[in-house]
Amino acid sequence: MEKYLKETKMDLDKLIRDNIKTMQSYSSARDEFQDAEEKMIYLDANENPNENGINRYPDTQQKSVKKLLSEIKKVSKNQILLGNGSDEVLDLLFRAFCEPNKDNVITLPPTYGMYGVLANLNAIENKEVLLNDEFEPNVEQILSEVNENTKIIFLCSPNNPTGNSISDESIVTLLKNFNGLVVLDEAYIDFSSKESWLTEINDYPNLVIFQTLSKAYGMAGIRLGILYASIEIIAVLNKIKPPYNVNILTQNKALEKLENTKKIFKQVSGIQIEKEFLFKQLLQVKFIEKVYPSDANFILIKVDNANKRYQQLLENGIVIRNRTTQPLCENCLRITIGTSAENLKLINTLKVL
Image (cartoon, rainbow, N blue to C red):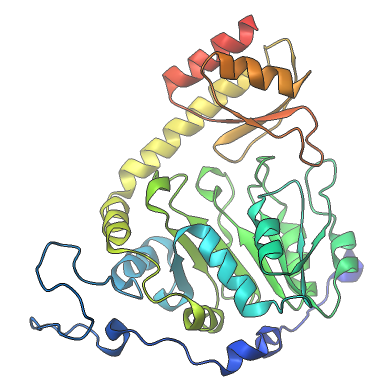
């Protein structure tokens, strides 16, 4: 791999689509006026004037949420973009940097399926380079697939559905040898023993990191995705994002939960304890052939017949994810860590199948 260890300079201007460079972003009423300290009379946005807590448009830049996230994550507010779930912010990356019917991205199956879905939606070629047998990126093959129209490489770490974290060496090599964006999806990072790559965000101008409040923070229902990147990349994405993409209820609930991170970290610790228990118990089930190590809040297992075992669990009122159709995942099932009672019911059911 040493032959690839060189410094590649990213030119952001060359990555941005030409129409995005010249377009004028929409300026909403709340963009044109920033809140003052004194109480103002708002007659600018054609809202219903009768106060009920949700009659006004939300803050277009989610300043309060970003301020709190900035303090928690030790990242500048200007390096944060929020969206209606991570899927919206992922889509913005395609819209800003990938020219339809011309550019391509690289994904590494088995991985999160929405990368490919969004590539298809935006008419972008998706070059798939399978992970190796240890579920690590084949860096040499990835770089050999890069051409002048390759704009983004997507990495998921810890990876979904395999649960493993990608080695630092692989990530560094791709960052240093690819002049496009390296997107690192850290949706499950709070369950990992490894540190987030947020500490490196200012050292690699082509590094884009995704996180979410849907997993460890227990807020899947409010749909809030988070992107961290350089100030320059965030400015491009802010230019094209919908003005009111994060509603006021989502912002308020996020603030409420983020102000009590001790409770969240306690829940994460509980999930990790349950994962260790579940891992040991799964090893004792006769038809489970392999239990894969996991840095996430789920465990991937290989069984004798995934379709059969999936159906049997459904019949016993337990829903898991059948991943047998995914590359390298034949006869594999993905199990999310539940509560202590849920995990016990799962184990007791598996042992009598």
